[in-house]
Length: 545
Image (tube, rainbow, N blue to C red; front, side, top):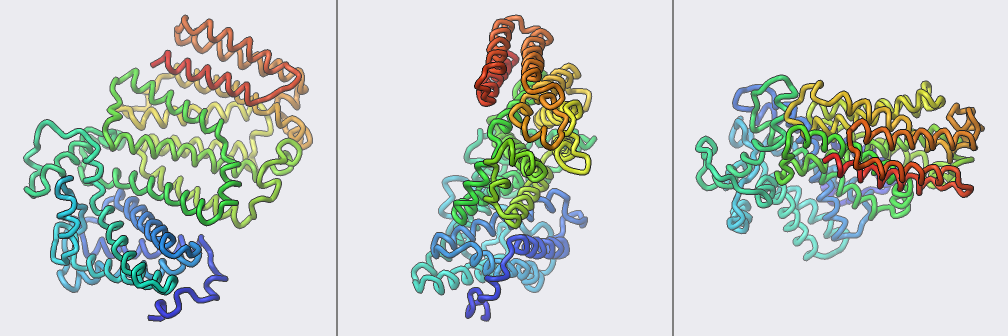
């Protein structure tokens, strides 16, 4: 009642901290997982699988964001106010297993998703309201959800003085949880139906077709490769299901976080997007596409029509972008003095973003990276960690190995190889390390190591002031332009020769000559050089596949 009477006390508004909200939600989720282990044990009696420990926090965070956006839509209140209230009523999720224990005792594998056919959607939508419906939805879940719906409705009523808005918000809250409950069925709506039926799956006649399709998706997906990467061919279909749901929830969190940021602070959104390295992200995507292309060339069909594979690819590419974004923030924080000379438009230099905002942004990106990486198979996840680790020792003190062009080039080459291998092992049916071609490691590593030096030209003045031993600083700006142009041209010509793509030589020679012109022209502009290399890589990639 104290929450209802004081929707958000003034002193809590003053002490608000997004990091504390995140930690509080983690605390609630941790206790809930502990209760789930005790009250909803697996049939074999062991602790819940590791994949559940990844999926469950992602589920609750995604639901938290969904309710937050719903409350924002009906009230136009600040997310500061909404988060501070919603974190309190999320304590009701701890009540759910306790109620089930009191009413039903321990129930093995009690919590399940609903597998429904498209033509039964509205029927199930009405039936689930019944607290005795069953089918994986417990009485405790019904009661706990009712308290949450009622609390949200009360908050909206207090803020808008509208009974109608309060009641309709409770209805939409139910819709949100219902959609989360039928996510596997939503995935099956966009998939190809299996031609054969597995009788083992049919433990429930009403749900059999949708469940069979869902299991077919899992069995035909890249998720099956995860068993191989762990050194065993034994797999558990429920574990694959947990991973697929983790993909969905992680994507939902990213999308909803972007919407919340855009709504709550247009200024911060503009600053952060202005600092997003679009060109570098494009190159990372092409490096990733190279790894995927190699797997396609070695093993054939990638089966991208499978929804599980498509979602895995979406998670991977978003994760690459966030990894790169996080690395840029670390690099910018270390390069403030250099950027004051070479890149004065950077947000940190112009102080368009406060230290607190930067800290919160980096923390949120790091959490997304950690959970996104945990959804990947062992090989892909580890290789992404390698790439992030390389960029850290490249940028940050005390090592800051970018201070010398030789170490800088080697590290960027290693990071590029790591990203290509990560995408390769995401899709490859053969998870042995030796499967990735040595020739590809040499080409990608050396090519990107040499090409990486061109970024140092525009930073010449700042690097010189900070005594960074880049090629332009060591050899002089004008001479280094010829050196870097020669290195880039060498890469463009040698790569198709190694790959035996004779038809690519004309393109390579033309691109090399054009690059020389762009490097030595009086009005040097890096974006045109990147564009030429960008077009070259696309052409090369299309010829390879």
